[in-house]
Image: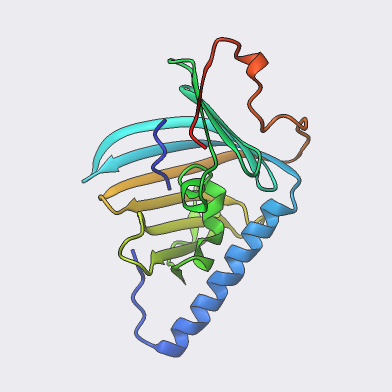
Length: 212
């Protein structure tokens, strides 16, 4: 499954930069708390991948979230995460790989994980974009502090009225650019207790590859 998810506004006045950074913190905190307090969440996404302005592919899918759990479904795969264990089921090969992903690995899978990136080695600033698809938005730009980070920079569009995450553009260390458009956001969803866990009974012929 392709998972490489997911520039910098130069500021010349140090005090002004401090104000912008504080506001960016508040916006990201509010967006993250909106997700955390929404109960179960479901959204549709489209991921476009490019390198040197050449399109390399696209992925469409749906993500379901509940606190630190998620279920990510695309045409090729289904990824389950129950807060600790991750099951990645590939439909073509009928294989499921079991892992316990690191926070960094989760950032490449779950687009909502990036809302907390600024707490983990990224500087943040307010950008200049004010509308996206006709909606008023905040643009927040995150820049990696380390030259070893896989994700070099991120651009987020967050709706001003609802603090929903609408768009992500991530630039990777190898120059790949990932654009993720998020739509069809539904809050207050009710998911069964086992919705975020791979059930072998539903995939009786799947080969289990345990990498924990």
